[in-house]
Image (cartoon, rainbow, N blue to C red; front, side, top):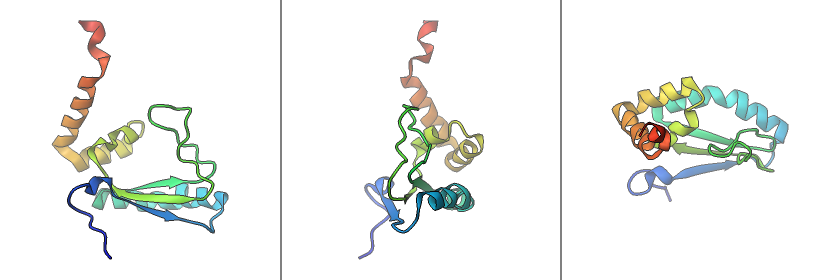
Length: 126
């Protein structure tokens, strides 16, 4: 049976690859070093994102720098298509933010504006 990648909910579909025989030390090297080359070209060409999870992954949550959601006792990798709200993950990395902006073009500007309108950053000026 082949899973459909388009239609309703296409942006919510994820492939999870579990590496049951990969140690945490090797996972870090594989995901942090080797995957970077594949991740850039896959995102630029097809909008594919990779999310590595492994023991010792120091990545933090967007809204809580004390929470480390990317740690897992068994290494795994998620693979999914990007969505316009992914800018939040790229905000502190200019290279990735530029790739996102190039990929989404004018709709990227609208998505950022919509998010900023919900924040109270202008409250002090009123």
